[in-house]
Length: 165
Image (cartoon, rainbow, N blue to C red; front, side):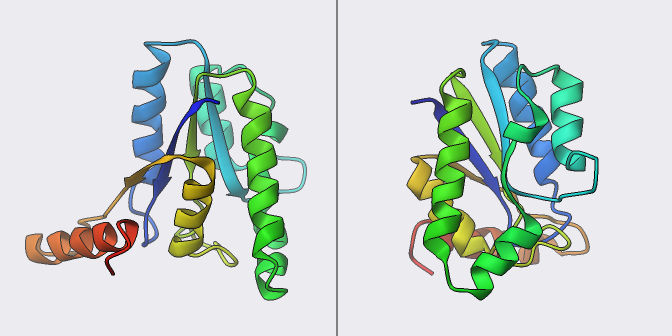
């Protein structure tokens, strides 16, 4: 079973992809066996999710872009609307296991706070991270906030991750 880091945020445009770039860079310098997974990805006809393409291309990771996600946003939204959280968790577990078989570390980037991230909530991302046995990395944006507002957002996110909120 690989070590897994799950990068989440409760707000859009917080810098999750930038954090993933830094994590993959640091980890790839220590091991050649790093994989990237977006449990819920942006499905564009004939194209890979932009974040998947960026990470895989930049680091030349040894994985197929089709293996870098579990379900599309549309599939996640349909599953959420149907109340079928188990199918979503199962799809993520299968995708993670497939990547984990040949890698020491898997970095996951949440899609919950991304524009168009319908179907996946911050809490659902935390549930997926827990199911994968992942360490959670919470990203909080300070953009347009005072220091006090950013600190409060970080406290709220931490309380949610720790089950205190």
